[in-house]
Image (cartoon, rainbow, N blue to C red):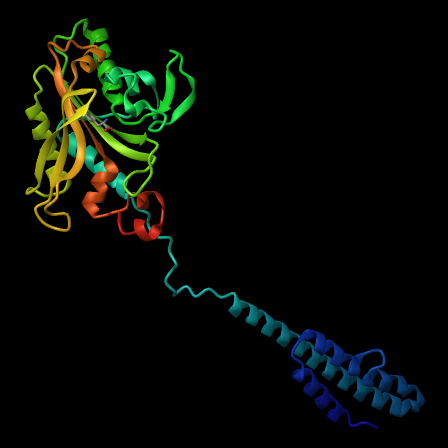
Length: 352
Ligand code: PHE
């Protein structure tokens, strides 16, 4: 007769040496399977006489249930181990600092846009926006730009197929100046509707920032760029007012009271006289050079007329400045294309 105690401890031994459920079930078959050791022993009982059958039977059954118990225990153990392993694999260390998505920030050109709005707002200018698909009248004709003006050529302008309801050809505005006419003529019309005359019409004082488009692309030109138009029309708005307003603006914008400005004679069809505004920084990387920053001038009488006003009584100034240009000078960026690449290594240098 086999030593049952030995068999039980041998079974326990082999159960605990298995490392997964599949191996355990294979080992189990050796003892408890259909032709396992204990099953065979129980079958063999028939050959014994009734007395020994009883005592032997009891012993074998005791051993069998001891082995079954050990099997159950090992099963549980392996299941627990598996769960534990999974849990620790999937564990999240809540004490780790998060990866974080970072807080986005305003695009540097948009920061300039906001800054410009703030400064002009403080000077009593309204802020207006107009359409980027413009018609020929507002973009050129109303601004006194002759039919053969170079800005109208296919090389400079993105024309859009089709015409508007007034049979005007359509184009992506090449500057924000059409807003001079749109805003002023609207203000004039509204005032006339409300009061019947222009006697007490307040000055028209507006800036119009926005996107503009030209067929142009290099380190300092992009086919899409931003401008801010400024317009002040009233009964007594002189060129000196332009100088005062623009000087205040630039000194505030660059936070630099020592800036020098120069108004250099220039030509635009919609202003007369016209001036290019140049700025010079007293110190720093850009010191000692005159940098062109804006077109400007006294609004041409034809343009004043196209606003619905009598140029004998109304006069004023306008300017158009590039927002990218202002941004480049403020932050020392030397390639305009960086603004449009959306490279976060560049953009993250302008924190919120
Ligand atoms: N519209 C001109 C340009 O885009 C700038 C300008 C605006 C000049 C207003 C004079 C007055 O170059």
